[in-house]
Amino acid sequence: MTRGEARESLVRKTREMMSLGSLGSLLACGAIEATGGPGGPGGFGESWPVLCSWVQGIVIVAEPVLVAARMMLDERVVLPVAIRLSLWQSFLLISAIVIFEQLLRIIVLLAAKWLLVGRYKEAQHDIYSLFYLRHWLVQRIADGTIIGDELVTGTCVGFHFLRNLVLKALGADVALTAVITTRVVAFDLVSVGHLATVHGKQLTAVHFGERRMILKSISVGNGAFVGTNSVLEPGCRVAAGAHVEGLSMVPCGFTASARVSGVPCQAVGAPKILPSDAAVQSFRCEMLLLAIAYWLVVVPMTGSIRPFIRVLVLSQAAQESDSKHWENLDALPEEAMDFLPELPLVSFIVNVLLVALQLLMTILICRLLPRVKPPCSYSLTSIHGMMLSLKMLWVTKASNSLQDASMVPAFMRMCGAQFGRGVAMGCEVVLPDTLVVGNGCFIASRNILTSATMDQGQYKVPCTTHLGPLEKSSGEKNGLIW
View (tube, rainbow, N blue to C red):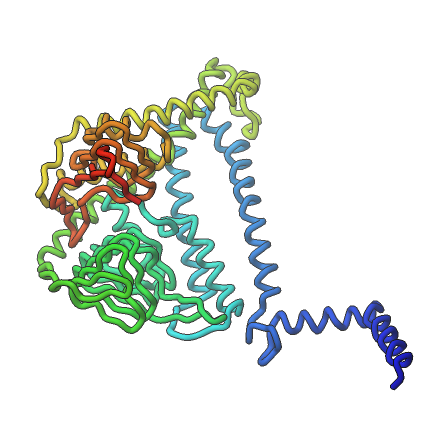
């Protein structure tokens, strides 16, 4: 072929590729390769990435629509009715709605899990496969429920009991006396024994690697402990009485049967003594009582405060009895409608006051409740254990709210912690009673500045936490923690 013929052939092929028919064929071939098919070049095996993209996109877009629908229901139905009721009836109505919403979320999650996935089994699936898509949908629904997020340190033990009940209903082999503060994934392949404590990054039986979704069982035995920010790989096992120190990693196929530490973990000590059956039974009964109290008191109170304040403000704006008629239940009374332009300013002021009240309540709780004097150990269900838990919960929430504000050291000092001069710190997990920080210390965010741990149904505080000062070559003293 001459050079001219070669040039004409190249021009002809280029024109053919640019034609609509050829371009459509090219896109069709690309779609086939993208959606999979055994051996497809550049594909993901038996998977459907395009289908996953569409379904996931629709779900993500639909979520704010559902939120907007709920807000409209509140504005057009709940709020007008609540204003026309007496204050105590309004509070009961809002509390009932809060409880019903939480129950409805759990029912939807249970239905989605058992209808879409059924039981999780050890297997391997292609990434973006139909099983992956069903798993993603279940986890997306779980995000808005009682099991969706990691728990703040100090969360009521009754909440753990309720959470474990939901996990058992989802198929997880989780003891009701276990304390799990992290997220659980692939429920049927997860096992946690009595009085075990699991913090860690995630308690998941799913591993993604090499374009595969790999499911392997994972188990934590009775009385075992998994420390903060540790990693349990799918396929590993933590034996009864074992202790996985924080920031450690238990690899797949490994059994941690003693005290282990490191990445990957290695044995550094002996296993713990297991709790007796009588202790387990007693702790279970005490957790049940606290769970009932939490569901009937704490959930309605915490979920109803802000909506009730709004009802209270609008009720005061429409306080005349003749304005609270029961006609047009989908509309607010005229006086309340006239007050709406002022509502954003009032809402802003109320939110500021609520934040200030939260900080003040935290200080009062830490100052008025008895101080913790280490070394000590309290049951999570005892009065002292609940007071210690309450302190850590409120201080941790307040610290997360303040983030890296310069007032954090002063706030911690007001809560009872001992701080030197020139300390800089962000949001931390602390027990103010047992924290001593020297002059000039810098503490990066997201550290755990306490020796208090939850282990085998008890709060254990072995010692006071001392930080800094460290000697510098210039003679100045400061401390540094990352």
